[in-house]
Image (cartoon, rainbow, N blue to C red; front, side, top):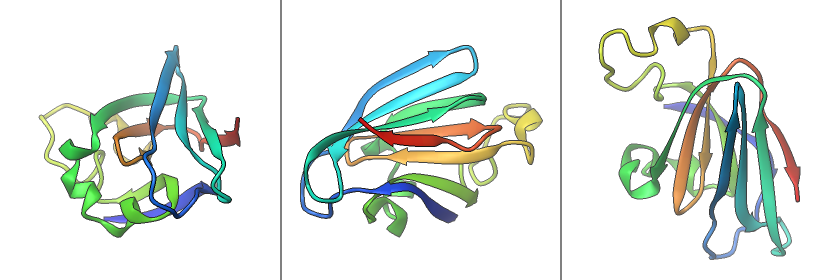
Length: 129
């Protein structure tokens, strides 16, 4: 799998972080991550997508393929998946995601408790709350 990190860095100490909430309306998706900022203060990272076509949430224990990769153990929550992900690396049912192949970018929001994969037509925006 190939990926690149996006968004701000979070604290490198040992702590629990998690998906706090997910809000979806029409094509817009907003994800709040309960985490710590780079200096260790409690913070919420808001990640928003304005144009998505698919997303899925999974507990990190169900994503061992991803959690065994170095990207999950870094100090970032947001990644752009360049190859080998949900849209072009996993076995799929015939006809599922066919219209999305090559048109949308894939992103991964990773925490040590939950993960969300997103197919989007635009890049995400991040802000600290």
